[in-house]
Image (cartoon, rainbow, N blue to C red; front, side, top):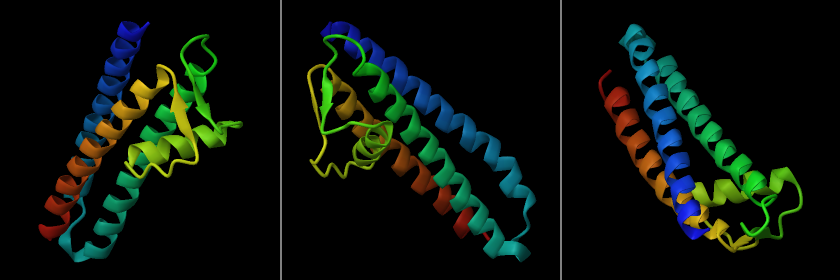
Length: 137
């Protein structure tokens, strides 16, 4: 079961990273079309778009956690009752905030750690992307 959990975590991580790369690649030509005379709008567009990308990734992991707890033997998220709790848990993991009011137990812990790692990488990547376009006005 643990080998399967690691394989699934790798697949999900690869999917999220691919989604992130694809979304940033699609944004690049659009951002380039906005001239520097609209600098405020360019920054607002970039920031809003990036937030939506991160929200989507948090939701993907939240749905994964919600589905995993339904599998016998996968584990559970202690304190989570509703799907919104899984989204909150996912956001705390993705941002590496980890409040501790909800916590994983069982094999699902692997996905929590992997999500924190993926979130850290995606946030860093996004910071570099944002810096590039905001400073090149």
